[in-house]
Length: 219
Length: 266
Image 1 (cartoon, chains in turn red, green):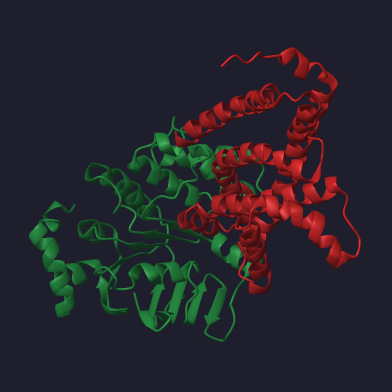
Image 2: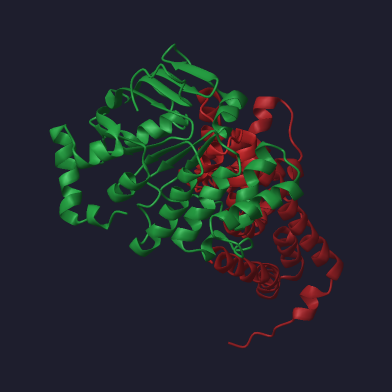
């Protein structure tokens, strides 16, 4: 096979590549942050006993965990407007899908983190006369947060890759930008290889970081 | 000491306490009183309800019915709804010290921070004063120099002594000990019992659940033998342990005689 690689040609428009990388990072950071906020509130609420609170929240978590993210994004963009009678802009529909998806996983991570703190620790705090809020703040959360960090980092890595689904609603992230450049240059090999390499360069350090965190928690 | 002691008002008084788990009875109508400075030891076979009774006194479990009085505060249960909740429940618990079988030290805090945690967070005592208090208590349980150690760096015996100091830091009106040596290696049991013996001699009001019969004879003013959720026999330690009247007490204690546990007493 004699294929003549021409990376220079596909990478020439550096501004556009940087713009795509910027959108990808922006969506990753914003939807991870939004997801963590959702996770903290829903996770805390799920620890309670009131079924009229926990039941709908469990429903939310399971629906978003058990349906493909691709369908969620497409649904918010194409289907929801029919119910609402007005359409969401693509950037918002996609952002909403990504954030709620991340939020569902964060809720589980948060809930599981708190649940992983044994009954004995709760009782030891109660035995000292702590209120629920004091117990959470002083005893449970400091221990639980340490255990939540590795799964949160892993979920964030997944989330950055998931932003490539912005492609389907034409938000110009790294993936969508690659498809446009491909259409213009007829060089899919160079373009998609470059895009993959860029994703790899962004994520590989994060996976190393996650591994280090896990070994530290084990200690 | 059970029953109605009219001469002086006990520090802790439990009346007709019942605890059911669903339809399963764990404690079936227990009454007892503990005078100020008295050491009461609860013995009995596994599952007899002695730990449940202790946890009920601390309200880590809500009794099904009955009355508990600690100091001036009397609480009745079984009237529907929770007898105590929220801040009032927390305030009640802060007056009672509890030491657990598995220590339950806070692993993210040093030994000193563990001891300071109650005074600082619950009593809102100034950190400097709490630190001084904590260092003093750690020294009292023989752990001077271990202030900055984390629980993972301590032996079981050391950890349990930190847990005792942590409970004492709240200046509780009564100390409860729930099988505090059961999870320890045999060679570490002595150091924990020595601390408890000292507390008893210093006049701490204590209720002790234990399987250490020799220790019970040594430290207890009164011994209660629980069986199947009721107090089957009670009285001065010498009487109950040396000359048990109840055949079930005799059967229970005979296992310890055979094991030679009593011979090591003293």
